[in-house]
Image 1 (cartoon, one colour):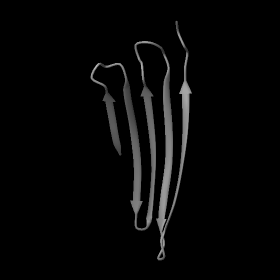
Image 2 (image 1 turned 90 degrees about the horizontal axis):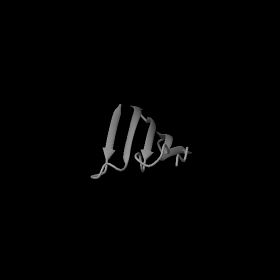
Image 3 (image 1 turned 180 degrees about the vertical axis):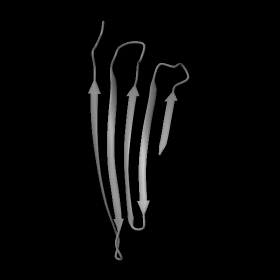
Length: 78
């Protein structure tokens, strides 16, 4: 399990995320959830992303698969 939080120097943007990963023998899988807020002081909008991936190592090579879903949430308060 890994977690992160980041903000820029002027604190006008922020990002946080959580990752869960599992690895056993030839199998590796992981899930990541991230949220990005480019302008927290200007509106109630943010973007979130969920990424899922995995791989399996066979004797002849490795097969990998990944998927990402990105959602934009905006309320546009003026």
